[in-house]
Image (cartoon, rainbow, N blue to C red; front, side, top):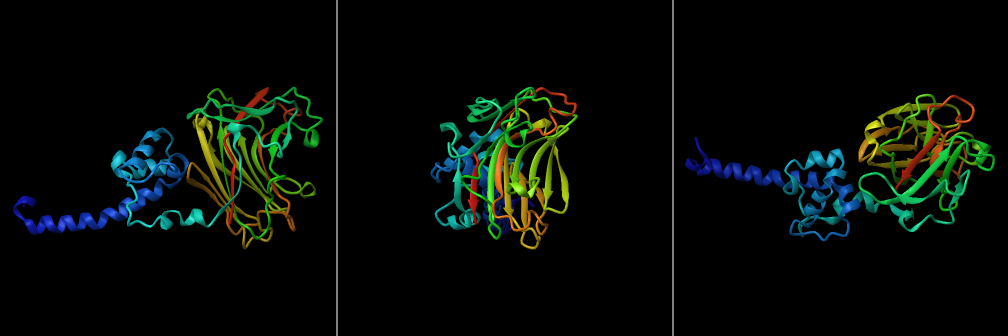
Length: 317
C-alpha cells in the first residue's frame, strides 16, 4: 500500500522519523566534536555554517566523523537554540588549560632544548596536509651528541619548565606528528618520538611512543616492569598530520592510574588501573622530538631523521 493512499501510515512514518532524527543528529554532532573544536571553533552556529566548515576540511576529518556524516553537510547538524551547549562541551569543561604552544610564532624560550647543533630544532612549514608552520626536529647520525642528555643521539624539547605530572591529577595532552612523504623507516632499530619521563634518577620513561620497524609502539613502565603495545602501521601516515590525545593520571600503585591514547580520535590504548609511574615521582615531564639511543652503536638503515610536530596542548582536570 502506498503512503499516498494511507494517511495513517504516512503519519506513523513521519512520527517515527521525527523521533529518531534528533538522536541521530546528536550522535553526528558529538562524533565530529574534535573537528568542530579544531577547525570551526570560531564559526558561529546557525544557517549551516558549521556544517559547511566541516565539509571544507573533509580530507582532515577522523574516520569517526567521516562515518557519521554519510550525506555530507546535511549529516552534520547545527546546534539549535534549544540544544544544550553544556552537553556537547561537558567533557571539555571538566578540564582547564594548563599550557599551550604556538609554534607558528616560534619556540617558547623557557622550554629546554636538547640538541646536538643549533639548527636541529626550529620551526618551518611542514610537508604534510594541511600545510602549516610547525616544530621541525632534524638530526644526523654523525652529529656530535656529547653535549646532550646522556650523550646519546637525540633532539628533543623538554616541557619540564612549564609543567610536571603530579600524582592524583589527571592530564589531557594533545599533539600532532608529521612524517614526510619520503620518510624511510629504520628496520634495524627504534626511535622515540614522544615521552613522559620520570625525574633523572627514576630511569626509563613511564610512557613512550616510538617508531619500531615502521610501526607505532607504546612502552609503559612502572619501575618494576615494562609493557609494549603495537599500535599499527605508520607507513600510511606519511605526508599527513596525525593527531594524538593522551589522558594520563599517574599512579605507581595502579588503582587510580589512567593511560588512554587516541590517534585521530580513534581509541588505540586503554591501560587504566595499571601502574604507570615511578614511586613518589612528582617531577615527571613531557618531551617530544627524536630519540635514537642506539644510532651510533648499532647497525641502522638511515643516516638522517626529520620529524615535524604540531602544537602541544595540555589540560588539567
